[in-house]
Length: 240
Ligand code: PGA
Image (cartoon, rainbow, N blue to C red; front, side):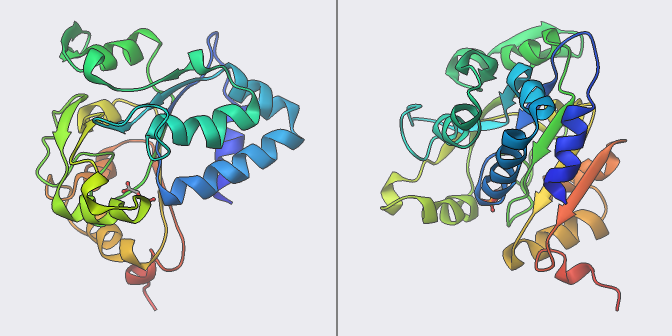
């Protein structure tokens, strides 16, 4: 269902330039990409659209090379680019070289935000939600005016991410992340939540007031944001 929705959005995109897709990573996205890749292998229209698209990652760990299996560069290469034969040149990541400030149409933004702006802006931004309500690596308390920058991860995020690393000392404490303003600028946003560990955050996001204590909740102010949740993540939203 979620991958059908995405596949249709991507296949139906029509503009005189390739689609710009903001990519998210993590356990939830892994399954979404698997379905999308399976569908693209059966549909040449979708495969062509994905092959032409430009990809802008939402975030990346500080200090992990693109060859590290837990880096988001590696994640995207193995889950999306390589299975579909998409050129690495179509994939962009935030990093030390592009988080400096740059003037853009939206005022003083970062070089990475300017790259997205120059490409025509993000048409479809994919996102997850953290157990603490983070959006990309915008942790609670992040400003809604934030652009792509280097950020500190909270203990809760470091703990949640430690399941992917063999030793707690290896888990990065910092990341490069699109800001809340960067994400709010996208034409459309689709957020995915899965598992009962996300139930509280999703309830806070959708039932509370939009606020910086739950960065994902700011998306409820976006004119074209869609949420897909499994039963466990949505368990606190039930009305019966
Ligand atoms: P997850 O992460 O899909 O691995 O739970 C999502 C997030 O923290 O944004």
